[in-house]
Every structure is written in structure tokens, then in C-alpha cells.
Image (tube, rainbow, N blue to C red; front, top):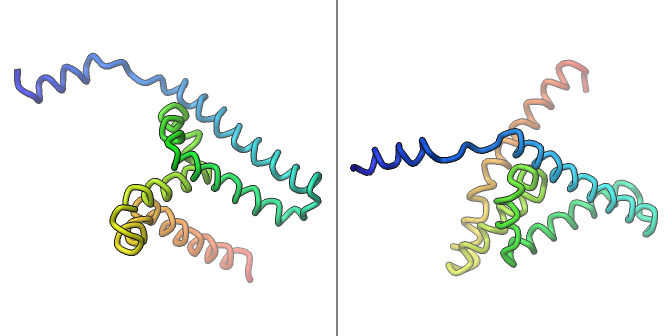
Length: 146
């Protein structure tokens, strides 16, 4: 049996992923991250008496810090394989992608390793985010004025 036929047979008999199950899991886990973010904002504003705008920034910093920390200790990859889009779509996924790239290329040094490869995965996200911001900004300006 050749390799192509074997791969076709394997694909044919592999169990199909439960799309609804994965969607619900992503919804619940992503929603839980949203609830955690709101709890952090409430903690910062009500307990620590930090203004709302600053509390939002601190919440994002905390989520990015823990996503990067969990990536560095190897926990985040295992959780991603379980949670999938629920953990990748929020800011935690962006932090995970940047930290993973930094850890992967750290042996090559700070400049040629980490510095030149840290945006390998996330560079396209930044690029298209900036382009979309300009496009929607122009549309808003044309429709609603300055």
C-alpha cells in the first residue's frame, strides 16, 4: 500500500471533530476570560480605587503577563489544545504567540534570534489591524465628518 492511499484511509476513518462542542467550549472559555477581565477591572476600580481607564489598561497587562508566564512554563500549550479558539482569540492568544516566538529563538541571541523573529506569527495580525484601523477611520470620517 502506498503512502497516499494509507493517508486517505486514515483520514476516512478518523473521528470527525464535534464542531458544536468545540464552539460551545470556545464560547464558555472565552466568556470566562471576559468575566475574569471584568472582575479584575472591578477589583482595580472598587478595591484599589483606580480610575476606570487605568483599570482597563491594568487588566490587559495582567492578562498578558499571565498568558506569557503560562507559555513560558509550558502550561499554555496544553490548555490551548483543549480550549482552542476560546483562549487564542482574546489578547491572551496574542501574548502566547509572541512569547512562543521569543522562547523558540532565544538561543540565537537577542538581536538575530528574539528581535528578528518575535513578530513572525503576530506581525500579520499587527499589519492587518493597522490597515483595518485606517480603512475604518477613513470610512468614519467620510460618513460622519471629523
